[in-house]
Length: 126
Image (spheres, rainbow, N blue to C red):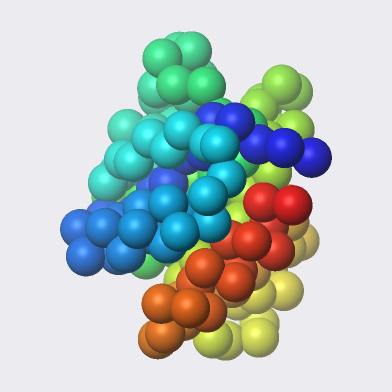
C-alpha cells in the first residue's frame, strides 16, 4: 500500500529531524506532519484537522503516552483503520507484545544507525 500522508508523533526534536531526513532518503512520495504531543495529535485527527494514512508513534511522551494514544484511537470506528507503527527507545519484548495487542501493526526499537532507520522506513513504506 502506498501511503501519502504520514504522521509522526514524537516529543524529541532530534528524533523528529532524524526521522524526516531518513524519510527523505527513502525517496518515497509522501507528506509528513510532525507533532510533539499525542494528546494534540489525537484531538487534531478526531477533528479532521490532520489526515493520516500511517502513523509513526513514540511511546514515551508526557501527558499522554503512546500506549494511551493507541488505546484511544482504536476506540474510533474510522480511525482504528489507520496503521500505527511504534518507534520507541524501548526494546522490551513485553511492551512490543502489549502494543501489538492494542492494535499497532509494527514495533521497532529506534535504531542507533541512520541507515537502519532508512531500512525500517523502506520496509514499512512498501
